[in-house]
Length: 157
Length: 157
DNA sequence: TATTGTTATACTCTATAACTATA
DNA sequence: TATAGTTATAGAGTATAACAATA
Image (cartoon, rainbow over the protein chains, first blue to last red):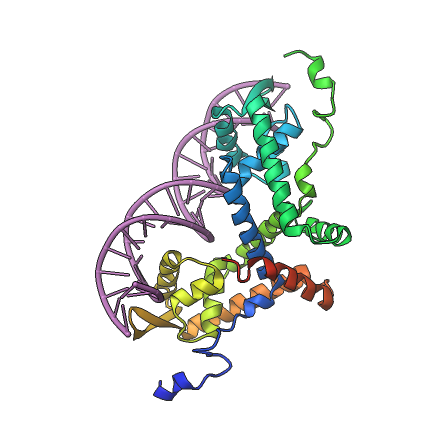
């Protein structure tokens, strides 16, 4: 390594200029960074009503589907049974959700009055979040994007 | 628990039908699910060359920018300084990266020969991943999507 | 003082394995 | 046997706080 190396920028070593980042050409990378950033913002806002994004999704789903069982929620949201257990346990402990025996080891989940309020709050936060960041996108493009993104995860696994 | 309860579906309780999921109308939710699924697939493939997605991004960045410092990598990839430390330490311990004193407490990072190989492997895996999932998208739409997604995280924070 | 690097710590999310209970 | 639920555990990723070393 010689001294002039650092002064002669090459294609691979822009030492003082902005470093190159070939990852930005990858659509997957862009998707990951955008999703990560947007989720961070959403998480902050949901934290103000004492919910994590997962808890928000779960309680919204329960509010819209009374007596739904844990496993079904997990299947819909892509959360494993083992990870649903502490999630619903916490919601129940905080008085947001109630359990009713159904049959077998299963029980139906229903929101309490304060749970319904939490679900409405969560839905409002998420809708505002969606409008803020995606409101400028035309309905046609929205539909296109929704269809495109849905293809990746729906009926996959 | 009475028998007819489970047999009388109402608007809110489609017990046997497909549960409603209003979240799917949210573009943010679609983005999150798609990104999560695609990252899962990528993580599996990178695991076959003993890299996590973070490690893959970091080593690709080092290979393309010799003598880059940790903090700079963190700024570019959106990884906090405190989280970069164990990451680069692991890459160094595995003989993929070398440190060279630069000045202050900083040191430049450079890939070793096996590190360069790992970076090339990682880039190949990511490019194949991108082509597999986004190859069908036209160059025009690709650019549109890249610009759209980039707006969310670039120069944000 | 500002930057770099490090350690400690904690939380969220995810994943697997092993177990019980019930249809 | 298949499904539902639980517990334990581990690993990524991310966040903050506090500290040392150096320009």
